[in-house]
Image (cartoon, rainbow, N blue to C red):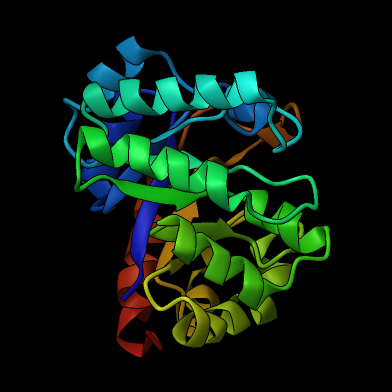
Length: 246
């Protein structure tokens, strides 16, 4: 059965994740405004005391996933700092000038994290979808991430959301078996309650969601996870789990 990962911004979100049985959280800042950037060390330390494994987004700014040498230095220092603060994993995404995964930079970041804690996990975030959009072949992208030392990739299947990306998500699972067997496929992006069963059936290893309902007055996503929606997603995952392909 796929694991559930909840995207949160604070310790309250971590406690919600624990309450609904999520396997872990992705901790980030400014999720609604920027799709997530690196949270403060104080927030990381607080979240890591709240009950489930915390994987910290390390993204110094919104926008392009191609970074300067100085920005890569910031990424490295932040990776080290969040692992020292108690993170069980880091979430990064660096692309080369050709739009594909930057293997040397990623290998360096993976090494920086594991020098602090050999057990730390590394997730490559939805920069993967940007790589696919730039023309990188999915098999090549997955194999590149495995060579770099990445454990998991977060993706909507190269589409605006997971509903549109379902066929590619299933294909990525199959390609992973043959080209990058150590890399897990985690579906994320526009995950809705009614989509959970289809995602389970696609064979993905994990499902990532912020479980934020719509703010009807503003027509936008709410700033924090909806406890009832998060619980419903966890229940739907359990219900569909026996038919999981992976």
